[in-house]
Amino acid sequence: MNVFPKATRIGLISDTHGLLRPEAMDALQGSHLILHAGDVGSPEILANLRTIAPVVAIRGNVDTEFSASALPETEVVTAAGVVFYMLHDVEKLDLSPEAAGFSIVLSGHSHKAKQEFRGKVLYINPGSAGPRRFALPITVARIDLKAKPWHAEIIPIQP
Figure (cartoon, rainbow, N blue to C red):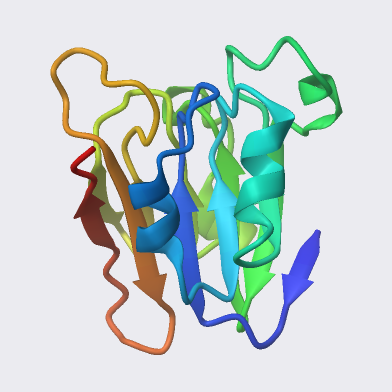
C-alpha cells in the first residue's frame, strides 16, 4: 500500500498509450499526487508525470512492453486518509470496495470519463488522455479530497 498523508489534490489520468500531451501535463499541475489507471504505454510517461508529483501507476491491458510487467494490476493508495483502489478495467472488479474499506475506485480502460457513487464508494474513470479513440473526448481529472462530498473535475484536453 502507498500512503501519502498530506496529498489532498490528486491528479487522475489513464490510457495515455504512450502519448502524454503538454495540455494534460498543464491540467495536472498543482497535484500533490498523480494516479495513473493503466495503459501507460511507455516509461517516459511516468517519468514526465513525476516532474509534477509522485506517481502511482498500474498496468493496463496494453502494457506488455517496456517495464510495464513491473507495474501491479491493482493498487491500494491512501491519500490524506482516503483509500483508493486502482484497477484498469472496472468490469474485472472482484471484491466489494465498501466492505474492503475503500472510498474511491479508480479505473480506466473504457476511454469514457465517468464518475458515480455506488453506495458510499465513488467510482471515477478519468477517461483517456492519449490518442483519441472512438471519437471520445480526451480528458484527465482532478479531485480535491478536502472538498466534500468528493467530486472529480473532468478536464477536457484540447490538443
